[in-house]
Length: 197
Ligand code: IMP
Image (cartoon, rainbow, N blue to C red; front, side, top):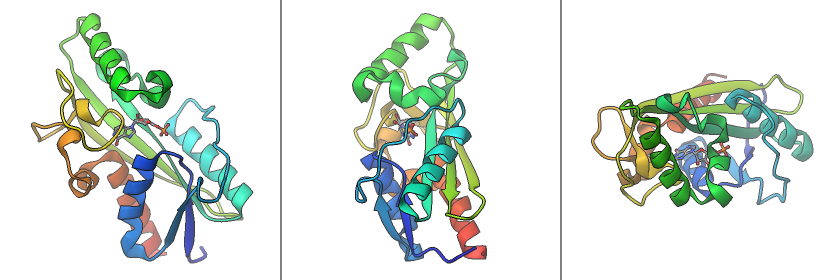
């Protein structure tokens, strides 16, 4: 595998890009976003996290000619049969996650289930022009809080309590979240792969 000097993050989500930049900083790889290079948004037509992350990374690697890292992630709630899952971004009307979280809390209440277990999943795909795509997975288990709490992070962070803690991701500093999060765990595998090559 060639040495990576510059990588495109195939996302327009500023929260995610900030997490990637922070985690990749020690590797001395120039990180740019799809937006920095005016690359198109890739439609997520897959039905699994892996399908979507491969699709985004491979499409943008082809368009830009650069190594491209994409993630697909989401929140899977057991009592809702794994929903919203791959549809987590679209579950929130107009990507208004404050509303999305209210809807999810209401749906969970309506389900009548006492099971609040849930997990975040993340699949990272690294596409390098002319090479096989590699995928790296991460997951964090936890439960859905009774109400929203905390204003840090993004997306569904204020309603997710990771296992072993009694506060939501909405109260986590970026470093603390990265050390246990689904994306942090997938990125650790990605970084280990880059270091051993
Ligand atoms: P996508 O991977 O861009 O399709 O977006 C997945 C969606 O899942 C995001 O828009 C968030 O709503 C949610 N999500 C993924 N990771 C996290 C996280 O770390 N915290 C909160 N929400 C997340």
